Each structure stands twice: as C-alpha cells, then as structure tokens.
Amino acid sequence: MANGNHKKLYLLTLDLGEKVEYLRHVGITTPDPHSSFFKDIQTDLKKNLQTALPSDVSVEAISMADLSDDILAKAVRIAGDKLLIASTCPEIANPVKGKTIQVNRIVDFEGNSLGLGPRPGSRSIHEQVVAIKKAAENQPIVIVEDGMFHGGTMEFIIEELVKHGVKVDSVVVGFTFPESQPTIKSIVDRGIAFHSIEEFHNLLDWVPDHDFFPFVPSNGKVVGMKIKGDYLPFYSVDQASLSIPYLYGFCDMPEWTSLGNEPARVFTTACIRAAISLFMELERLTGKEIRATDLIHSKQRVSVPIATTQQMLPRADVRVVSYLSEIL
Image 1: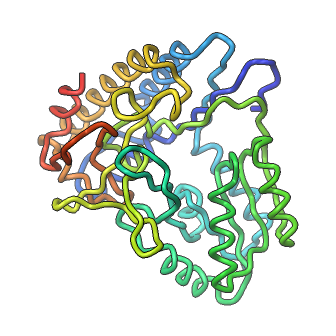
Image 2: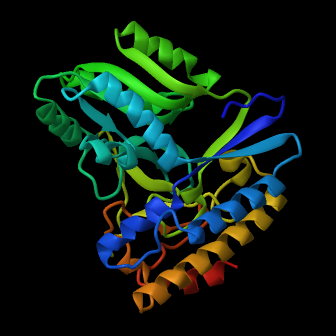
C-alpha cells in the first residue's frame, strides 16, 4: 500500500456501504454494504476525484473493512483476551466487543475549527471515558485506530483517559504519516507501546468517501459551539445536528480537500448525482419517500447539511432527493 513513487498521495478510505448500513436502525432498507451497488459508486468516486486532481497526484483507495481486519488481527495479538480495545471507529471496536470513543472535530457555522467534542447523539467525553474506565475493570486498555495524520485526536484521547485514571497499554493504528512522528514519540515517551501497519509518505490529503455524500451517517464536519469549556454539537428545534459536507458551495474546497475551485465544482456535481442515485435506491427498497427527519436518529447520527455561507438554518423535514436535486 505504500506510495513508492514520487507522486503526491491522496488517500481515499472507503466505508460508504458500512455507513449507509446504519440507516437500517431507523427502518431504512439498504443494499449490502459490500454489494456491487456501492462498489460502482466508489469506483466512480475514485475516478472523478483523480480527474479533479493535478497529474502529479495519485489517488489510493483503501477499503476500511479490509483495513479493520488487518488492524484488529494485530490488536488482538497484543491485547489477548484480557485487555479492552477502544477506538473512535465503530467498525473496529464493535467486532471485538470493544468500546467506541465517540469523538469528532467541531467547527463553527463558518467552518472554522473549534476543538474536539462528542459526536452528535453521544454522551460527553467525560461520561464516555468514565464508562471505559468501568468496563476496563482496572486493567490497561489498547487504543486501535484506522490512521493517524498529525495525531491531535490521539493525543486528546490518551490525555482524557490518563486524566481519569485509565492506563493505556498500547496503541495500534493502520497507517501513519511522517507528520505524526512527534505524536508517536510523545506516546512512546509515556511508556505506551506503539504499533502501525503501514506508513505513507508525500501525502497531499486524506478523506473518507462518506464525507462527500450528504445525509449519510458521519458526513462532513459537525457544527457546534463552546459551552462552559466544552465543545458540543449544535441541535436545531427538530433535534437535528448540522454538518458541513466536503463539497463545493458548502465549504472552502481548496482548504478542506486540496481541490481547486473549478475541478471541485465538477467533482461535487458528480458526487451529488451519485448521492441522488443512492437515496433513490434507498427509497425504492424501503417503499417510501425518505426525509431528513427519518434519518437523524440513526445509531451513527445523520446531520443535516449546511453551507458556511448559509444565512438560515436548514429544515429537517425536507425530502432528501429533493434537497440534493436543488443543489444541482
């Protein structure tokens, strides 16, 4: 998987099918996450992303399902049957009955980064860490992640765990980048063992495919605010959380995705058309029109998309296909 040539690397992690599968918890019928339906969408996404990038950039797509298997195999060898596995990725934590740390970056309504806070619909970070401490039963834990870029989230998690008296035995990640070396050194200096499967070099950017599809669980950056020292998601009167998709017209595409504005506009058009096809298929399988209010309470929360330039809060009772069609 390593990037051995001199091209810059654009890493695209693939878990769209697994994210959409969470909609089954709110009564939506979905295709199998590993079906040709999702594989075709992901193949086109990679092709369109490659077309939107300069010729000296190469897109590398990695299946999160395959990566999770590799990471877990290594983590289980380290943790054995005794140590609890914790991860911010449900796809990693769930198969081994581990604990998911529901944390994400919170941005303001203009898309400016505020800090780390709980994912929408989740308990505070403090409550989550207390639950992990109880589940660990005074034993050390193993933190397992898909990848680590700069490592700020990893440092935050370790700091919160240690602050609450949880001992971290080791950290296992699927891939790292040269930018994460200072964090790795800091982790090892704490007496925590660090293991990675792969190191990528010459990275331009790293984006999961679900961030390009509005109304899919975990899409985009969650909008929130600082309340009494904590960063928390914002909720509308409809109980809907809001997020800013990684799409032209919603965010600063050169800053968020490293795509120039005109290629980003063309790429976004392709993404929205794919999202319309996705939700039309979900409507066909479910047998009804799907509105945002049907989705917002899924186990992994669906946030209603909002643009950084938008003056009014979006309505949550809109039909998803109609909303997406209006974007075009």
